[in-house]
Length: 322
Image (cartoon, rainbow, N blue to C red):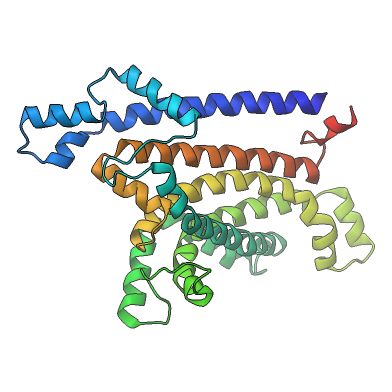
């Protein structure tokens, strides 16, 4: 019963969040300077031409009516037609989804596989001279460097000196796995730098909090090796904050993908949305942001369940016993 109530509450809150996002993005794209007619027709278009274009796409209707029509269509699975390509937005997003999904998965994997060990190392060797200072320095640098700066630097270096990894020549994984990974390594690495740094910091704080627990002291007293203690006593108990952080990391990666895909010329959803913003292609921007919000909400529900598995005191899994 408790679990059912939790699911109902999350469903309602998720629906309310998506509705709020839809209102904000619908209003925001129409408040951007330079409307669709001005962007498409140019600065010398006549009022009659602008009016004809606005009528064709329903932009001459009151804003609340435009929003109502769009929301009803989205509820039925129709994200509209791109004003530029004249193609269904849903089909365009679906075609670009594999690129963004692969980039995000690689970045998440990199942030976990590199950030967690780095955080554990800096926590275990936090004493002076223990080797944790280098990890803290790298973590601080990773947080400080913006993606567009790091990405532009990487593109310049690898393009200038031909270091063996391709840039801007993406091919599907099913067509050529080796070449696909060669083009995705650099974007995923750039995208994951900030996530690695934040993961390392969070892991370090969580591990240091566990290190002072009595059961760790008892394990040390029994003569267990340091890395046995880390594997069997520390990682599981320190995992909940790190797993919770994944929700924030995923949200960051979805936003960072817009910049990274544009810098590395990847045909993903991020670069598609960036182009749509510049062209004032309202349907594409609205659908893209709504999709990102939906993914973020779903991933947060999954993370809550994972936290419940790791520590039932913090999750909803205890409700299964009621």
